[in-house]
Figure 1 (cartoon, rainbow, N blue to C red):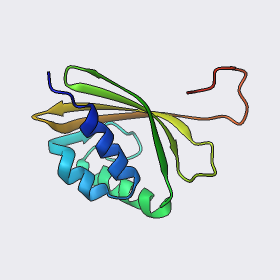
Figure 2: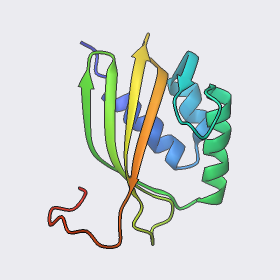
Figure 3: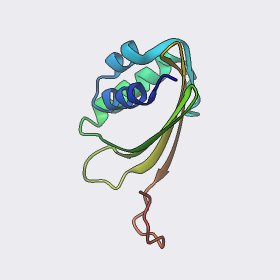
Length: 123
């Protein structure tokens, strides 16, 4: 079975570093759709939002914690900070691949609280 973990991670790393169009050109397939409720579900809408975020947050930090794959789906668990000085969020991106390209994307995030009673932390 082909591993899709590397292209999923590369897509996120490129997008986080501001190379959004390169991420899309290298990894997004025809008919791509996403499920972020804040934007229309098209590739163009999400790409535009990612580019705007990259301009607004040029020092974004993406730290991959783990990846998992089952069949054509890859989950990437990350610590994402819009700038190095903030606590950021724990984020899971779930990708579906078809013909070696990303054709569907879900993302779920949880802000890291200032204080937590959980001694294990979020990571």
